[in-house]
Amino acid sequence: MSDRPRPEPSPEVKAIIAEFVAIQKAKYGPDWKKKLSAEMAAKSAPFIDALLAAHRKDPQ
Image (cartoon, rainbow, N blue to C red; front, side, top):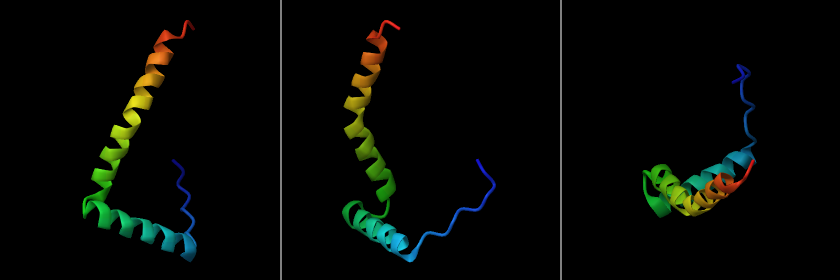
């Protein structure tokens, strides 16, 4: 990774992120990151499995 400092997000971007976090906390509770990531992993698993199965069948 680069050692350069990250640029500071604009106030509008910070407001959007804060709103997203508030919605997720209201929906999932204080450990929303863990719950949301588990939900996203479960939803994407069938797609990933199909993608890997197709890759395995590829004659290359």
